[in-house]
Length: 392
Image (cartoon, rainbow, N blue to C red; front, side, top):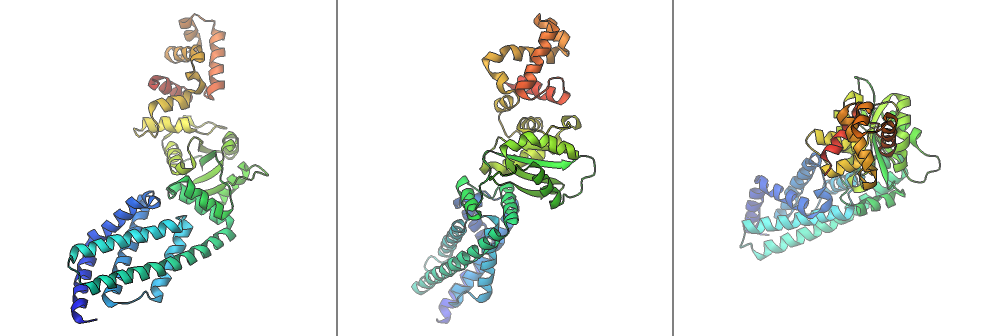
């Protein structure tokens, strides 16, 4: 290779490495074109940018020098692949991200050197094809090894899976199903995501042993559906079969803990469920927590509505709280609820409706049975009041 093409390539290399817009263009393209990367939260994007910057510098260097990936490059690629396998990002998605990045790299070079010499263009094509081929082999091998390691440590693998679900790193149920199949587990569907913490003002970071102890207390012997636990700061986060929500209140009450159990979100929205539950525990007043009872989807959505950032539309919040009371056949119960809330007592509500006080109290008991919300409890009365107010 003569000095002239080396100088031309080096000029392009220096210009691209010095321009932060190139890395930004690569990250943007990957984020837009690869669904798994589009689902990443903001905390993961700096890592993507760092890898893009390193890859850009190395590939341009190989193009300028007609070089090949070195052992240190291969070790780094294997490390990246192992991390992505542990993250739960499918190898096909990761390899696609590198192909998208290579396309952006080619476009950026073409924009800076529109009359690129044929030798330089051939060298660029040869370098990219060789690098992508080597990268594919190294990453596939590293993924297989990491999968074997994770499968051997099932508890850790399940914890990592739950961590990824909470962080929103799975873009589809299909990708989640593939990862579950590799681990040989069946995730609960429907599920309950329980976020729980000890009561009291002092809340040090939760120990993983405490979270797993709570998981064992809630597990059903012989249940083939997998459950898992992890921690987030001072809180335990458990992924459980949907039926476990009914037992959560008693188990947490025995420990003097409080919690929020979300059961109405799909498996690809575990991150949404976690955010709802965590926000609910952050904002719920003390009187919303009662021994033997956990906050639910309805409580979480009411609290989100009060905070000005509802995850559900008002009519959905109303349905979650009121349940069967929205049926036309339960109109008499809605009238009793409205009268009770407006009048402030069962006796006064009975007079408004021209009922005997005992008949009104019977209707309040029916409301409690149908909604699991006691209109006499201050917090539950508030949620019922909000729901009947915003109901279409």
